[in-house]
Length: 232
View 1 (cartoon, rainbow, N blue to C red):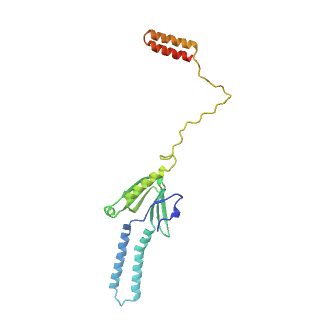
View 2 (cartoon, rainbow, N blue to C red):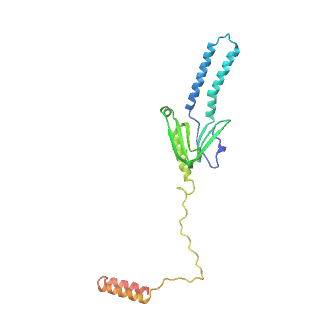
View 3 (cartoon, rainbow, N blue to C red):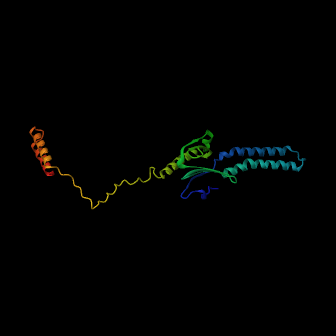
């Protein structure tokens, strides 16, 4: 049973849809096997002369034990989803009574995984997700290939932040220079102030003094003089 697409937001896509690793069923399978063994031993021990209702009672009890230990666990396994989308992490479980939680990718601050030696051999492990969401720190057990899932969560979290306005990856605001303000035709046009003849005469005297002291060469004196006269 795949994760229902109707639960996704517009534009949201499923990246990973994982059920718990099969190792989560090992304990229940061992308990179920133990129940079968006990049932067989009881049938061998009970005398054939015992009433049939006794044997039927034992059979019913053994069947209930199998359903409770294996059937219920299989149903939980089939209806539990660890889902990673382009927007969030979702953990959903249950068939009749359902539980669901989700963590927005842009609120995730850290993702850690752990594996025992046995879990590493079979490709299982746990994930711990820290976030600023209401759930805080959450631990998820029996995750398939937790290191790869951790890497994918980081990738999708980064992509989600890149899509947020005002973050890196979004087009920067325009830096074009503002258009000049319109000129009012009724205002007088301002022109740079022209130097007075007295100021030019003072500048020429200073240049002549610098030439006399040898600071300026004759060529530099003529060039500076021409520049001053050109401003008059």
